[in-house]
Length: 179
Image (spheres, rainbow, N blue to C red):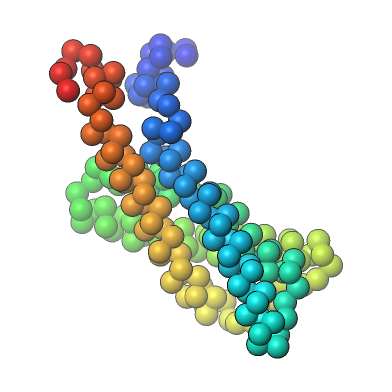
């Protein structure tokens, strides 16, 4: 470190164990459950479309679900920054910030996901052409994105609450103060 020793530039402890960092916990749980969710959704989509007599190529189902997860993983740092910055704000300001953040993240998720799908389909020599209008797609995605945004924000919040209430952590940060 160039200044602050092991405290780092921000003054925070530089050697926080990975599995004690609320952001890392949130990211790891999201990635793990996201992979499981992607697999279940892709398999379900293949089965549902087959049952309806409208089969979908397996690669397409995996692209549809995989691009959504990839977009969420790319946007997760944004959610964590928003959640971290709003955690100490008064409730009305935090609620407004999360509402704006949720809308922005949902729009970004939909745009990034569509871009990844266009690229994946192009690599396969096909065109990605959703049958619904973009306004319908945005509404469809927003309904699901709210749940994802809220669950990741809450997971980060509860991880932070658990970590900040640990008396051993407080003792390591402020040795002169009793827990």
